[in-house]
Image 1: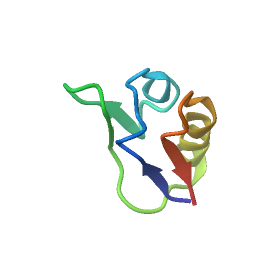
Image 2: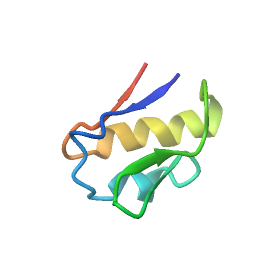
Image 3: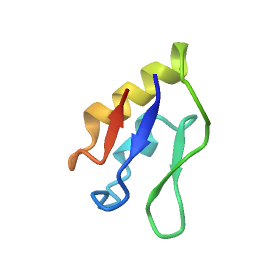
Image 4: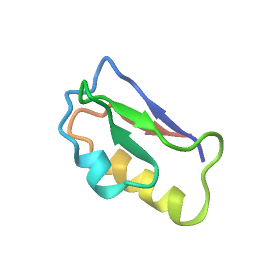
Length: 63
């Protein structure tokens, strides 16, 4: 699974960082930044899917 971020949709709520701290973080401008490259699996995939599910503006997607 691969996580994608739409920075234009992000409003900086921070819920993604709260549920997936090993996958992404918010930068100084309160935008999500991926901390891992490539395909995610196992626990990291679970965290990423939780981040996608909790984003109130659908700025994250998984493929």
